[in-house]
Image (cartoon, rainbow over all chains, first blue to last red; front, side):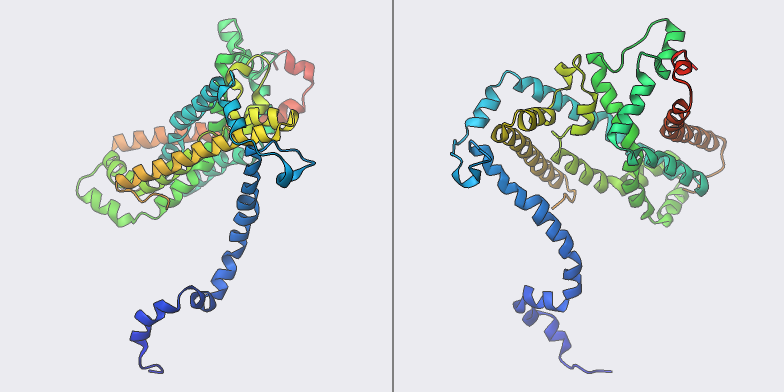
Length: 317
Length: 49
């Protein structure tokens, strides 16, 4: 059956020249399908970016973007010379660092553990259990933690009291703030974080394991030489993406956990933006703070991506 | 993945299953605790169950 005789030639050079437009016409349904995604990014991510101009203005809502006076880097200068700046920076960076060190490896570990389970029913039950906290909002999570850890009859403190005769104020003491934040993050998100790794692990060819076993690899060798390399690129990509919002501490959670006693360690850029921008109405100043955060995130992503590529990984773009 | 049924493998399996069970319960039990507390008398809870 041959309807077109010169098909091989039309596939190569001449088709290239017609370019994008022809592709769009040919694959119109595919392009139609990804249109909502593109629109989402344009409407909710790119258009709001023009709001950043207010960081370089003394923005007044009545004057709008056009008539508000331009002030250059005034707000940035004010932010960097603010006595609070280093406290905010330290709090934000420490939380991000702890989250990276203590939270980030855990989904990988849990995924490896789940991957070793041979009874499908057991595996799925545990998976369902650990996914549950992800679907609960931060307000509820903090509420549950309050109920468990409060010194006024909280379950954990009652136990500690009976064992040692004293109580630990997990929720008020400044030194417990960061551990509690990280612990909540772990409790809420660790199960959900395994999904992507388990998906990557499902793609590993079982024949590889068989071959490894015949070659005498024991269980640990199999994990080290087969399973971990199988998810290495996933780990690198997630790490790069995580660095992109390195300075996002998760406003809701921090805001809910803040008390007058732990403000010294708990105040982060996100809560600062909220206080300055929304409660004190300093739009331009808080826009400048937010922009600083984003720029740091951008630098980290580009840097991490460059590093990953230097080490022969795929990177995210 | 498929493993030999040696003793050490079985022990590793057992520990793994136990740890997973603990993680699973740690994720779910707080919800039951909250439900239980919300149905009990506050004074009773304050006294420590």
